[in-house]
Length: 386
Image (cartoon, rainbow, N blue to C red):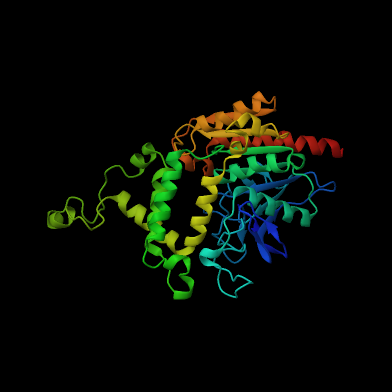
């Protein structure tokens, strides 16, 4: 049973200095909170979101009973991250399209939508903006920062940018940087968007159009890479749509080069269409670039051990056996670098068939690992309060 939540927003005059050398002023961050902050403010948990998610982490909106947050199975009363014990904060990243200031909003300097002129943002910039919001909420130290995929990169970056403010970091299905193949997938998706005739150099808002074709293809690429081959075969195999399967009258249609024949094709097109209705093209470009740029070892000659020497938090890392976008080997790189620095690290590698999307699903072993870890965190501040 989901609980009712209310979205909030906070305005900042800025300027927020960005890694690119640019800055942004007069920006808004959308956020939600779940549970209650305890008397000594020691039970706060920040949840960082992945590419197409938002600050709506858990619960439902009163007027939308089917609007469950993207990690509602993980966070809530009695759930692995128990909001009867923790005060959980979800923040929509700067540059997103779900309430925080992004490319579709007006640039105060011009009075027109930022569009392609929105400044480049990085994982480190998001973390800095999150820290500003936590400052405004009066939260100096986090019991934990948590995220999956791109959210895991933000959690890792928190331990490096603000090591004194993070007690625990939970990094799920993530990596210390993207591989060349991952960057390549992102670039193909971006090219699909920027070559859409309706993209108009990123200033399509003024034209009253949306580069839907590019967004559809970008989403289709994502769906293919975030799921495992086994799961796709189990769901769809080589099944044909019922409208064409076994019908002699449809022989010409069956061998068409244009029509949708296989169920997997129908599934991809459906999800691509849905994505193009709610996601912003410029936001997609910004977020995938932030993914590509993240590499804390870059400033240390590629030495991840040296980069992570700054971290003082305790860590839980979780990976999934069939996740080939963010493979277990990448999580183990982080584990080794932390252990080389004599940090406190727990690691779980879950044998799950679901590919990268496993971090969003209800695998009992995965949920049990996270629940146990957060129970140990809760025991530290609950014991101190007695």
